[in-house]
Every structure is written in structure tokens, then in C-alpha cells.
Image (cartoon, rainbow, N blue to C red):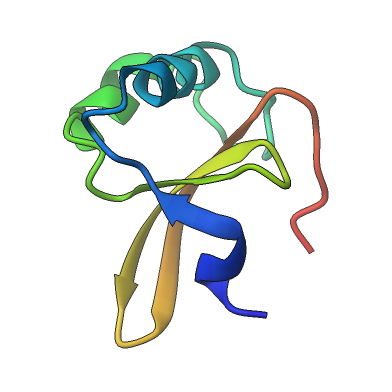
Amino acid sequence: MCFTDDFKKLNSADKAMRNKYLSYVKSSAVNSELEQTNKFSLQMFYTAELENVYYSEKSDCFIVADIENNNVYLHSVLYKNYIPLF
């Protein structure tokens, strides 16, 4: 399975998906002990243009990642309900 089979890059012109992403940034489930409790400002600064935000309909989850030479550098995982990452 390839990364892009599940996760599709967000289109910054899609207002519904932008709003859904904003909602997830505001109230996503915590997935690590070191996660910021109020990460909205930093997350939105880093992803304002949605250029490195991807969404999986199958998992109902957003990720923020950089992809270089078929390597995925995962920065953030956003979901409403806990999902196993592996």
C-alpha cells in the first residue's frame, strides 16, 4: 500500500475541507504525552496554505507531512477519535 492510496493532499480552495481541518486542529484527540494542549496558533501558522496537509477519508484523519524522495516526514496527526497509527 502506498501513502497516497489513503491520504490525499488537501485542496486549499475546498472551503468545506478547510473548515473540517480547522475543527480538527481545535479539538483533535491527543496522541502523545508531549503534545501541546493549545496548539492551534502554531499549527495554523505552519499549515496556513494547507500545502503539506493530507486527509484520509478511510481513517477520517488529517496529517501534516513533508514528502521528499518517497520518504514521508510526519509532523502531526489530527483525528477526533483515537485510531491506531500502526
